[in-house]
Image: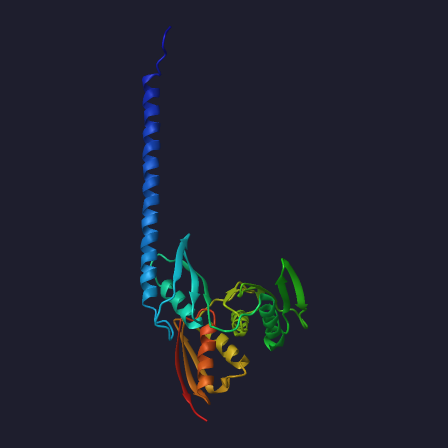
Amino acid sequence: MKIRRPAPHLARDRAGVQWTERVSYIQTFQDKADIMHSSEAVLTQARAAIAHVPFHSHPIHPTIHLRLSDGALILEGEVPDIVDKSRVAASVRRVDGVSAVIDHLRVTDGGAAVGDGELRNAICVRLLQAIDFRNCRICAHAKGRIEPVREAVGESSGEIAIEVIDGVVTLRGHVISLSHMRLAGVLAWWSPGCRCVVNELVVAPAEADRDDEVTEALKLVLETDQFVDADRIRVQTKDRVVTLEGYATTEAAKRQAERDAWYVHGVEDVVNRIELSN
């Protein structure tokens, strides 16, 4: 029986294909190894950045879990309050290799436990009472269903749906400005029992987010806060750092104005220069 051998040029072609496939496999393996090494380097830098965060009145650093997903750094764990939450997110946002920060940190303010339904209702009430949302449709997302709480008064200027799971508030829908988006988030934070706010509200039409947008939003928040005299407080924002100046009648009012600033989405630091004066 005659054994057929492949023609020399076919043998060479097959060998070439096998060699190419081998090189491709080695290159893919090396690429994956480089990505893993790069990811670990990013996580190491992020952990180092968090280690330098001056946690607000808490000498012991909380345990924060980090993971990367397509360049986005995800933060998980618990921190004492909103100041720590904002500072941690700001510190890792400046790490090379981090394209975005997904902040899932929850605050543990030591307040009494509040059920999800009670918290959701409290946020709905705040939105209903806020004059800036009188033209918005307000809905509650509960048990997999969206139930309308109030239709828009007059010409509709947006819709906000509130969902609460284990103290984490998620806001969905659309509003007419970045200031409205940020105010809705602060109203959620003001509600007792809120541990985290995931603000997914879309601004339509879209607006460019700048420092002056943060300033305008905080002014709106201060005007809404009944415990603060907004007329006596000046607000400036530069590179996401808010500076508060002016006067407050009590130390509590001074602290509340600063806390309001920390609640505003996008704020990375707050300088409180408010003075006490009658």
